[in-house]
Length: 144
Image (cartoon, helix red, strand yellow):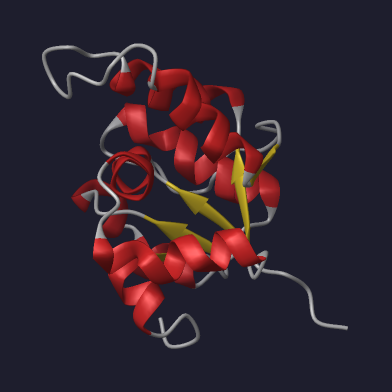
């Protein structure tokens, strides 16, 4: 029996999925909807996503729509705790939670467009974590 892969999705990619409905992420959205992958999240990543959605100077998302976006994401993901620290340190401390979540949840993938996280891809790959842009994962999840 094949195990369903676990993935971590950073905030920027979540915005592309749930707020902007980016066509380049349609394959990822379909994989989430069809249960082909299990997206994992934690209280810390949820808090960041909610905070970014609520920034009127950044996105101007209707306050009535914000909880709907969060609920849609949370319905398609698994809440887990941060139980381990990643062996790699991100230059941006605000992004460390995504690495720690990937290690804590045993995720095989971290989908991000963040340069600081992407710079850790080679180191993380040695430990079995693929850090890639979501477009690369969608194109061929087995190739990264």
